[in-house]
Image 1 (spheres, rainbow, N blue to C red):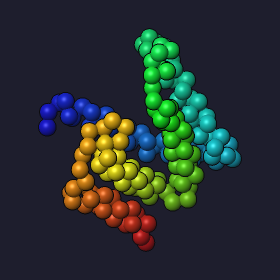
Image 2: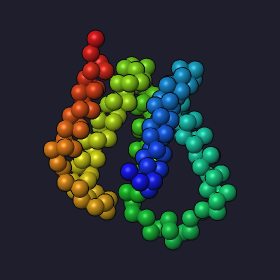
Image 3: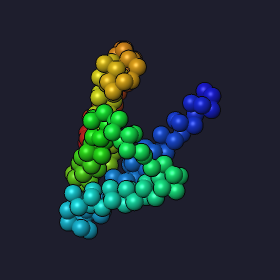
Length: 149
């Protein structure tokens, strides 16, 4: 593998580590506050402040025309992220970090199979192959094993 593939994979791997760490951290915040939705709100608020500061520092503020040119569905990312954070905060104390992350990954892979297959949101079409189905099945097996015993 060359560096142009290793660097993004390493970044995504670190992102996965941070997401797994974020789940119990946010769950602890929810326990302290007594409300998982409030904990998600605070998590998003801190994230917003950090990203707004980085964007301002980089001079990466959008123009009005750039904002207007985005398709309506491009604005749903924050809504989807808010659901993700809230459901993880709720799920971790119920089923643990491993099962929560395994279920999240399974959901992501199943959705990714469909999104790739139809070329959703302007993506190039990637067919559903038996190898990709086996990969999803292995993740399902991992989820089932994480709940066994």
